Image 1 (tube, rainbow, N blue to C red):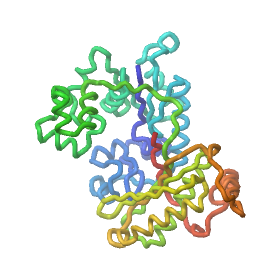
Image 2 (image 1 turned 60 degrees about the vertical axis):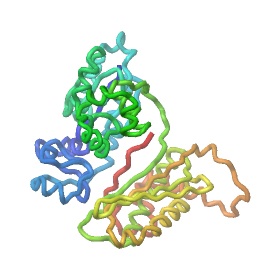
Image 3 (image 1 turned 120 degrees about the horizontal axis):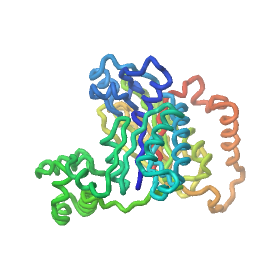
Image 4 (image 1 turned 90 degrees about the vertical axis):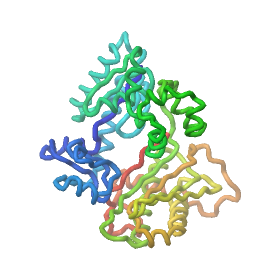
Length: 393
């Protein structure tokens, strides 16, 4: 049996935990873009990734708070420590959710429901947060169960009642079914998972393509053989920053934000003892369109200078779009990761090796704080609230 444990409205719940006056009131984390909303705000239609202006129109009396990512990271560490105390088989999905394999704990810790009840009590008592848990034989169904049980709930899907639970649900509950696929299915009169399951595989493939058709056909019959995977290395490291839409920023202002993001992601890269070859730049504009640009270098590195130069080149290439549409969010990701200790030496060797500079700066940041040594481009400038992107496996 597998548990899917998911913290409820994580960022907003941490804010309500730490500030009693916010409890029971609509809370929105983030101003320019909604990073998280409490359930009181969600009742008015406020959702994550929504523009701040739209959120204020839907819920004028919402309380907007600035994100405190250090607090969220610490809360996540405490919760994951509880997960690993329950079972060593923990697969983190993001900072606020994970799969736990508890199939072999019957003689030690009790039934899966008893384990889930104890887990929820510990998270509430030790961390002060509500967490929802779904229990099922497959990862897919456990995640669906936790979604149905939210907020602050627990749902077991017994082995003999899987399809009875799954088939009445709307097609949007299937992984990979977004707005486009939902529209295609609705156009053909398919509104529930059971109606999708009733279709032959070849019909779904003809309708959605080979990959999507086979994927949805398997999930609609609860076929998901994936085990809980422990210790999988991340495939990318990144961060993003919401710029807001109150005024259009100049390219120079956006560049300073870019410097801070690259500096932060490179520190995380070195801390993880990884190197990368690909820099990815993501921008969102005032009309809510998005673009992604990337560049792959011949040499893997963890040094900030060459990666920053690559990011600036990507930004300069889309300067006309920035001027035309206005940028409201910028993000960077480092991908094509490898272990730093496995880098192949290259000839000719550099006459002046500057690779030791970045680790020294990292040590100063860890000992004296991130503002102890700053790049000249960031002097006199607040670091601002940045959003660490979900680690992608």
